Each structure stands twice: as structure tokens, then as C-alpha cells.
Length: 238
Image (tube, rainbow, N blue to C red; front, side):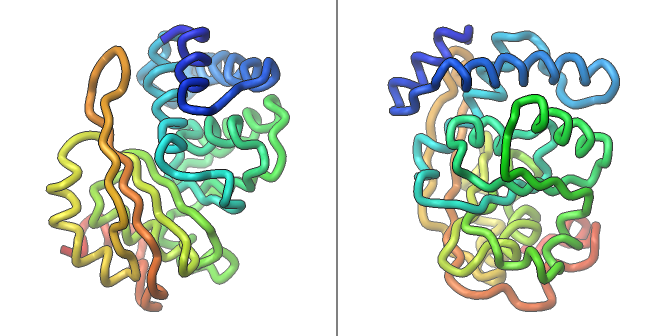
């Protein structure tokens, strides 16, 4: 997907990018490749692949979820900034918080944010389990996003404690999502969530399956969750 195709395909979905926003995506690509030589940010460095599999794929959440009506978003395990930074470029009003367990990635994200001139960005070097216990962040976000971080039973325990009641957890997944949701149903309910909708589509060009899972926070998460760092992964709530 070249830059013109990227611009046109977003335009078709009602997302019009200014020349400044297109410049931000271009600079994002340059910095991603530059920093990737020093640390492992992504296995994908070909420009057209980055635009398709990182930028377009990240923004695809906005085809199904209304970002114009939310303010504060937390992105769990964003790595090189996906999906939240491409979404932020498209919707500049958003306040974005990113939590990631690797400090080197946080350094990259800070530098990236400054270079792109993004405001209302906050980065935290922390484990999601600890972050979800922090009273300054627990149940404070309109929306929490995660892209292919872990299976749903684990991901729900990392993300739902951060969502305010009435807010949403949006998980971006590849295939096998129905199976994951079937196994993770108990965890989602226990943590205060209710699966609202699953949106399935095919990524252009490579035609691989993508799923956007929208979970509404219908009640508060019990205080005992999330459990200690590492526990959700070792002993999923299934």
C-alpha cells in the first residue's frame, strides 16, 4: 500500500488526512526504520508493508469504533505505538496514554511523539498488571485498546480494569477470535465486561482476516484483579 492508496482508502472510510497528517505518517515511518536498527521494534520495515500492516491496520479500528466521541484512551502493550499513535494522528483531539513493559520502547515513543508534534501524550514504563492496580489509572479511561498482545482471556485481565464503567475495551485480533472469546467469556464477565460486537474484515492487498472486538464495561472490576505480574499469562481466567 503506497501513500496515495493509504490516503485514498482512508478517505473512502470518511477519514480525510491533511498534508500535515500525511507528513506525520511519513516521519513516523522514517523514525520507525531508523530506531529499528538499534532495537527490535518491528519485523516489518518495507515502506508499503508498514503503511498497510501497521498504519492502515491500526486506523482500521476507527472504521467500526467512533473515536470522535471519546477523549481519554489507554493503549496496553503498544510496542512501537500501534494502534494508538496512528489513531492519534487521525484524531488529534485524543488524550493518549501508553503503557509498555520495555523502557527502550518508551524512549522511542517519547522521541516519536516529540518529533511528530503530538500533544496530550503520556507514556508509562510499567507492567499492565501493576498499572491496572494504580488508583490514578484504574477505571479512568473511556477506551482501552490492545493489538494482538495476548489471547482474550489474558488480555481482558490486563485491559478491563483500566476501563471506566460505561467505557469500552477494543481488542484488535487476527483470526481464531471466536474461539478465543468462547474460552475467555468467563474472564470478560468476571472482570466487568460484556462483548458488544465483533467486526470482521479482510486487510486489503494481502487479504488476511482481521477482527475488532468491542467490549463494554458494564460493572466495576473486582479489586483482586488484575493479579500479580505474570500470573494472568500463567494462569488465565478460563
